[in-house]
Amino acid sequence: MFNEREALHYRLQQMEEEKRSFLKEQQKERNEIYDRLRELDRSDVSSLQGGALAFPKATTETADEPIQEERIERKATSTRRSPRKKVSITIPKAIESVLKESGEALNIKQIRARLDETYGMNVNNLSTVLWKVRKESPLIDNPERGKYTYNHSRAAVNEVAATEEVQEEN
Image (cartoon, rainbow, N blue to C red; front, side, top):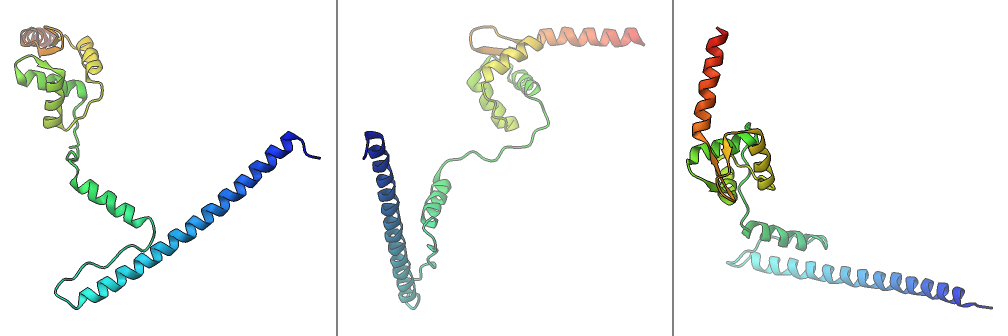
């Protein structure tokens, strides 16, 4: 005698068996289609090799390769960045030198572009990095919202103080 729980369990088993058989049939049909496509590719290539037009040999030996070829084509046509340069400078020093070289107030977008051009650096969350750099270095100023500069006058004062300390030590 069946109760509802057993009936539901039995139905789930039936559904699982139907799913397996359906997937087997679908896999069999897919393999047949790929086999036929390979045959057509071979016959097309062999008939065209003797003529003026010659196509490259078909490379569709498995079902996954056409997808891979499609991906390769997309990669070739996409606009990707050039490989990054290896840089031995730290991010704070790079930011400091970019601001020092610019001589003007730069926004985050401009700093990011110059870091990319000059050092090949792609800094994630540059606003947080700039906040930390400003905290550590008194040479980086924030004269207005979203703008950052290198304070040349403060740098000159620091250099004078450093040379005086060296002279005192000697």
